[in-house]
Amino acid sequence: MNSYGSFPGARPRRLRTTPAMRRMVAETRLHPADLILPAFVREGVGEPVPISAMPGVVQHSRDTLRKAAVEAVEAGVSGIMLFGVPEDAKKDAAGTAGTDPDGILQVAIRDVKAEVGDELIIMSDLCLDEFTDHGHCGVLDAHGRVDNDATLERYAEMAQVQADAGVHVVGPSGMMDGQVGVIRDALDTIGKEDVSILAYTVKYSSAFYGPFREAVGSSLTGDRKTYQQDPANVRESMRELALDLEEGADMVMVKPAGPYLDVLAKVAESVDVPVAAYQISGEYAMVEAAAEKGWIDRDKAIFESLTGIRRAGAQMILTYWATEVAQKLARGL
Image (cartoon, rainbow, N blue to C red):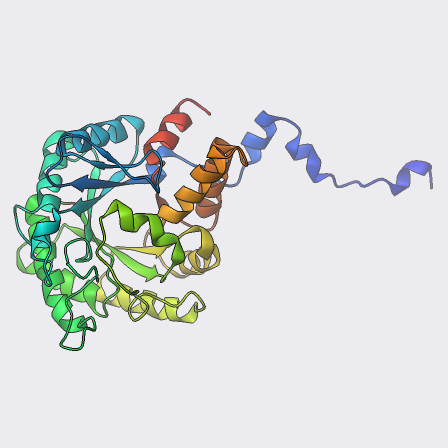
């Protein structure tokens, strides 16, 4: 045996030698079409309002929302998820601004539809939390608890007004039991069979939602632990998944994304419908804050986090960096 016999024959490093080699053998690729842009539109403002906890993200005016939609189309982004921020005076216990045909969210849907038509998948948050004076995702009972079944009636009405406004996909995010089935029936009843449901199937009660509360002007006191999922559980997520699919979900989502990649992978392996993941406000804010301090490379951290979400099984990623990342991907960056 010569002296070379102790050297390894198998050398995985051969496939990492150059950028071109690494690109050729990459198992996971990001594409602009994988991305969905969450966007906030605020009633009664003429200029965009910066969100201090999410540097670079704003509450749009109607005009700047239209521009953001056009930019997303031009970058190759697939969809936009709209969140309405009403005037405080219009919030009430039932969230009636959320089902007003002339409420800010319905107006925003019509604006984007008029601007880009079917070139961008228009999605809408189907939840009452932005519109209630107590900040919860549903109506409350006499004891101050969220009333699941009374909330379902409100969601049915909300689905119908959003569909009438021209939305392509509704995203029920309130985590009420039975919400997908009720919404599907409500849409079909008014002849909106083509409107899809992106079910927030797995939505954890997470500390990472913090900046989002500012983004939507939340009035919440307390927490949502009685209806959002316990971060300790995964079997519970699979039960939620089975129920949503049985009720007619067209697509399913895991939220947040980064802290729950194990759950995302398990969901993706279990279904034959498209799977989305939402890289939420806290995930965004942490990268931006650390980058501002010079502690991490911003662009590399963004792409690495999104690649990890894609690798775990998400076919679609909701991210506040959607347009920026899509533009960079188009330039080969």
